[in-house]
Amino acid sequence: MTYFSKALALFVGTALFGAASGAGALESSPSNPSPSSVKPRVVSLDHCADQYVLALADRSQILALSPAAQSEYSYMRDKAVGVPTVRSTAEEVLMLGPDKVIRQWGGGYEATEVLARFGLPVAKIENGHSIEIMRNNLLIAGEALDQMDRAHALIDEFDARHARLKEYAHTHNPSAIYITPSSSTTGGETYVDQLLNLGGVDNLMAHTGRTGWVPLNLEAMVLTPPELVVTGYFDLKTNHQNHWSIARHNFLRQILKNTPTVHIPSDELSCSAWFNLFAAERILDARHKLLAPSHEESADDRQ
Image (cartoon, rainbow, N blue to C red; front, top):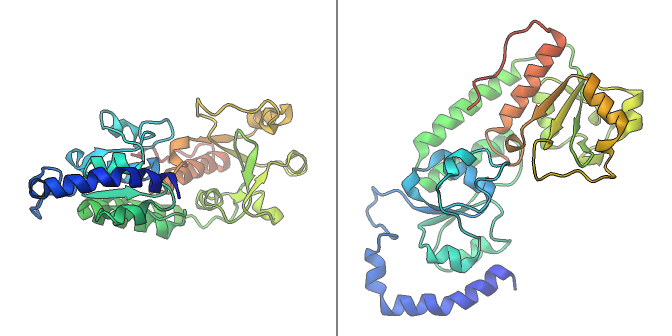
């Protein structure tokens, strides 16, 4: 039995007693609005679900966000200031009396099924980083929050940005490598590989036939130096490098010093969401500067 299920078992006696002694009060409670004109009040269980709730919901709809809503890797953290937070345990969620719960992974494997037993609808943000999933997640959240106009407006912007990125049919794509503080990099078939391609650069590790997340290979970088370096998660204050990490190697420091480098903010990479395209736009900007130093086009309109 998971912690979520155990906590719910402890809470169920109190919940059922309250239902038996005050069922009429439950129907008229402010936390259970009946008019169809009232938009649902929600709880978000993880920081990825938080992003969709903060982007689309009215402030009055948000009963609570996850404890990580204001973390440095939360893209919408500024809008989370002052919003209550809640741990993703069954008793704490149910005590708030939300109309719906929004989650991607928060609450554990059984969270959706357990909450459904109490008649609490759960909108599940899909896992994955494909363009189709990012787009569909906006529809899922928009429908759950009764904010489809805002969802469609964000989708229109997302589609326009994606179309602009796809316009570049590059005859020469500079080679690039992605570097993290843990000294991991990406081969093909990952979301960062997708962002590199959208940004108009060739993933050096993908061309070696590697797929997924792989250790950084300094020897390969010596033999085939990248024309561009893309870094992620170096800006996190809480992301302390291991003293034995290759990311501390003097050769890699020289690569970072002497090779054009674009630093992607962690909050643009930490969740599968519309703002992942902003990372691709940063890469594209760096590509423009690399191939044409006088190029003045930029993507400073990110919001």
